[in-house]
Length: 155
Image (cartoon, rainbow, N blue to C red):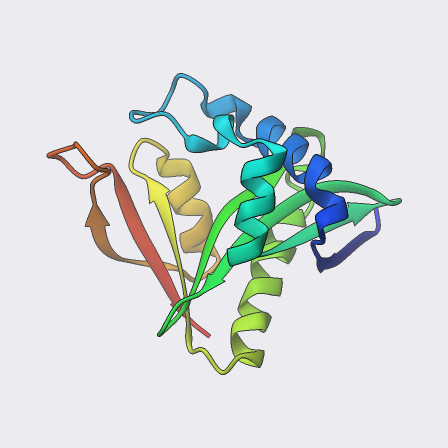
């Protein structure tokens, strides 16, 4: 498999929506609060692309993965990493994360941060294997207990 990474454009919006929905389907009904990814539409992604940046992973011209990131004051905030199920465990997710890390370096930002739901310890372990470390916990609005952990990596 040959994976090509590039910045997403508005032409990618339908593919971004499809990859996000397919990539997060396994979490439907498992998260409290539910993931907002399931509510993403072409319009919400269009708005997101006006504020954030996104990267797509392609194989033979088909979008098979994506990740969004936003340039914060002191870091790049990585989010909404999704890979189509049939392309997982082939390095696509790692390549997308590395793309964002390289983008941070190019922007002279020294850290990448991301949030992971506490209900998904396997996902937290995945990022920790990529060099990310927990720096704080947080709770979604309306929740008294922590619902996620923020991980960070100096780049």
